Image (cartoon, rainbow, N blue to C red):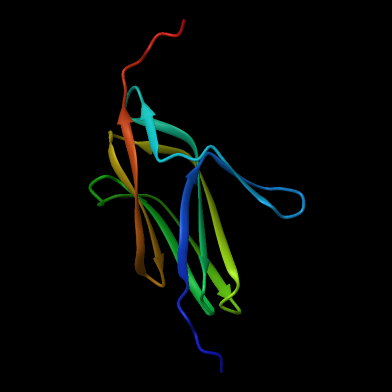
Amino acid sequence: MTERIKPSLNFTIICDDIRQEIGGKISLMGLFENIYATKFPAIHPRIAIMNEWSEGRGEFEATMRIFSPDKKSVLRETSSRIKLGEVTFRHRDASVHLNLDFTTPGTYWIENYLDNELINSIPLKVVQVKEQSVH
């Protein structure tokens, strides 16, 4: 029996969109770490999140949650199964979230779990800005 090895989370990237190109390449468009809004509640039309897992072996459950600033409310949640046959394999997990409702400005949190264990917590700042006139 092959030894099960917990994988590492190499990165979490927040962007506008993720596309798989011809030939299998993945393109990430519009990387960001802050969202700016003039009024609240603010609806953000599209957020894509890419996670990459590697250096593991076996099957695991990966869960990603987007939390409110007080970490009491889950705005979105996705789960997927990771299957890594060898430690040299990589697993990329992409999720797209449409019409995400940010009720107030503040620091929201993107948390990644592996088999229900918290692996990382990424801040997503939602900032209120003044409306500016366009010339």
